[in-house]
Length: 241
Image (cartoon, rainbow, N blue to C red):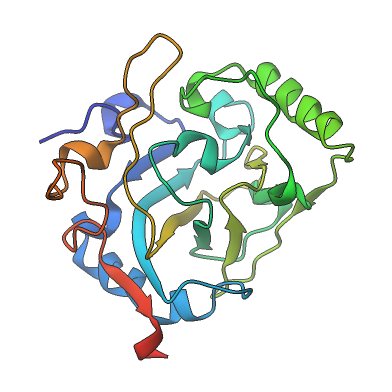
């Protein structure tokens, strides 16, 4: 089965930035690495859940093509596109396969934006890759103004063997790959143990559907079960500490 909004690069797509969802599910080797409890155990600490589950895993390949439009990832926050999730405590680990710096178009965060309230009025749940970059740049500016905050962009310089975590409400993006080497990484999204499906509608009344919703098992009330161990296995729990 192919979910309706699956990001899955094939050769027919050409030399663009590649995104391949469900890489943990598809690749046994990568899956074994990403399921290591260490990834959940070292997640940023504050009063934190007793359990982490995998939400999604995406293999990303950014080719060394500075002029390729898809190489520039516009500003966005993940939570905006996960409106079908009940939790606002989800995290993402960005895991490059090599040293990753500004030259390679590393992931860049807007410092402190996870504390912002989202400006009212942006009801679009279209993926950021399908929205105009200038529109999202303006939306970032509006959100900062709404929160009486400044936009302070911080590139994550990540040595090989390290990773960067960000909160689901942190604004982030990335620039083009200016090096002569492809940038390879995995984006591992994690959900806390309390996260579950919640119905969410677009302004026109159409329900928002995430790819999991056509793959995972159902709960007793017929909703998608985001604790399905086949697609959302437990990554870390308190007993494994």
